[in-house]
Image 1 (cartoon, rainbow, N blue to C red):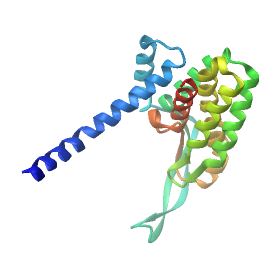
Image 2: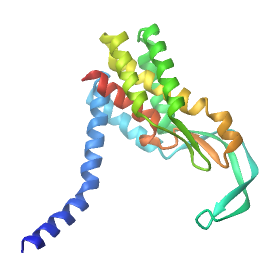
Image 3: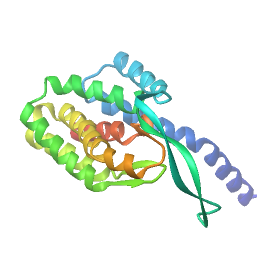
Image 4: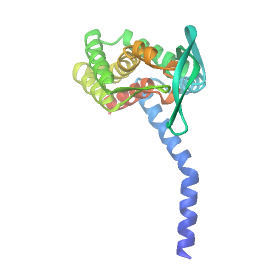
Length: 215
């Protein structure tokens, strides 16, 4: 009987775990935004816009049709294929976080913001990796830690705002813009800046940095 109840408990836990993880994620996201001195009336519409914007990509310039070699059947064989290539920007994963970061950067200490952004850009570039047909992936650990640390060190009175802005700008520069020319040469598809939307490194680094800096 004990085994039966244990199995039921595990099944229930598996079923509700996505809701627990999702709730925790939105709680921490809201906490990170609250450290930016935003009210609940401002946080909820922002999260809604970011979620909706995550499904919207705006193409930048014209897309070209290029011939690529792609693997298939578990990578054993390769074949020629035609793919559209170009650049797009995601509303929820890039545009809205950049607008928020720009808003707080306007009133942030310039020297502290600049120094922190340069450091985060450097480590974002080092931690980024381009995966063909998938885009640029970046390890967020060091950008988050350095963004929060130097924001607190250089601008303790406005650390969450500096950390958020530097996190967003740093990842955008180091993992997206600096990799963009190389990704366009080596890639085989449309490169989307902030393409993961709410879960993109641009937004997550900013939120995690502000949360850490505000603790």
